[in-house]
Length: 233
Length: 233
DNA sequence: GCGTCTATTGGGGAAAACCCGTAGGTGCCC
DNA sequence: GGGCACCTACGGGTTTTCCCCAATAGACGC
Image 1: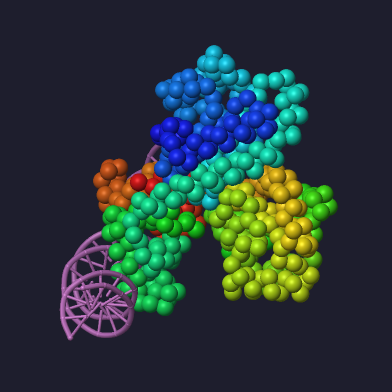
Image 2: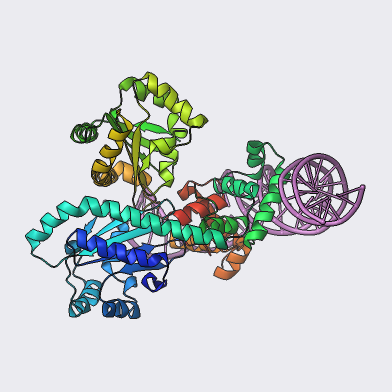
């Protein structure tokens, strides 16, 4: 599992950093970060406007592997207040040093998911009194929800686009057949559905396998999903 | 794929119908509905405060199988305005009769997902001018997002439902074998790799297929990927 | 027209996957 | 102790997929 600091990537990614800054300003927050968990690539991609020193420290220690804001929030539906984390070993490992970098362990993470098992986590922090934090939370949780959805959408669009450019040229017919295969249909079924011979279905499927560099049909389906060519049913 | 009208279930479910009524009242909406999609069984479970006659009509025709508010929104991250649906055959089949029941085709669906591939769709409608609708949308989308999350969370807490929707517990061995299958290995290969009989591999694979509700191995691989059980190679 | 490319269909046979069982050993929980 | 889920293994038979082969028809460009 790799951690990629997208803030080091130029182009449209800079706009995303600015978006986080803007979010902080508008919602009276100290810091904001976004992490995209891709079960497909298995990686974590992050943006944050934390101090550069903390980001570097975090990446060097590979904290994304144990960070409770990631592991816990990724299993939640609703926003998670950091105050609800267990004060366990993992928590201390991450939030102990964080304090030395001027970071406070009062925050909130809003999870958002896409249809491919992809998960985005928008986290924000604010150093203030508990009561202030509670009222702030109530006020901004709706906006955060919306912001998280938009951010995740933008990131996924970008990723989908770049994948498309790298993806092999799968014909319409091949894609169609892969989609039905992923839906659990046999070659005969698909032939009936598309009103073509099951032999033809087999040819297209083989062609798709070759283009995807897959040895078997299940592998081809997996790769097609990873490349965004088809969607799991 | 079954459609179950949860509003016919008593207990806590009645409170959920009231929640929808309350939502409509507070946000100046005509109707609201919620649908939970199960990735495993492929089933749809819904609550709605639509007219009873429409609900019955909808269920009798099994519109949940073709309803664009379901099929399209289930693949989206962000809220989907019904105005953006293709005016295709499916759309007409559902929204044509809807008009006869006093329903307007101006609406919005907010998708929300949990960590197990479960998906909830909160839909709302309001009959008014386009400009009014646009400003209303902007005003309430944050609240709808929050409401959808809470609703989905509440529904998922319900044990009966969560059991049905939750990703089945795939054993370590099954997961391991699914992963190798997705990597393009044959059952014989996997048997050699894991130093077990290829028949045993087949048994595990069959068991995994059954747990995932998949008819074929490619389908099982697709679902396992979506559920985050395995990663494509 | 003529080569080329893609989509289509087909045969035959080998290989793999799938379905129906049975069955022993393990570990866990009530 | 008994039930339950898991991992392991085997057999026989059916279905499906896969592979190598050939062939036709339409589209496209030169």
